[in-house]
Image (cartoon, rainbow, N blue to C red; front, side):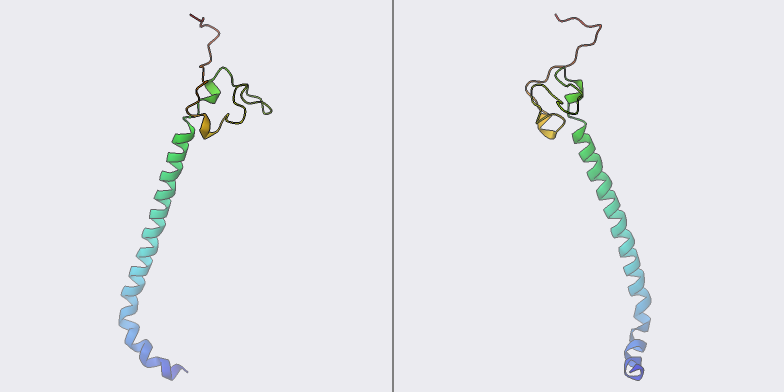
Length: 97
């Protein structure tokens, strides 16, 4: 079997080094590209989730059973980002005017 493949392997031998070099660099570039894309996606997702205002709302209860007294199903989800019933918590030092 080897005598049949010997001419083929011998003809490809000068091309193997450049092919392996290109393949190795392609793997490195694709790995770095994938890591950068996943970091960017994670940063975008985190930025979006930090827009959820529930924890600063006066209707937020911090209870596992009832998170929000007005919209319990929307609390702490992306649907709550533009909540029409959002009212900022008043500090104990602030007064209503």
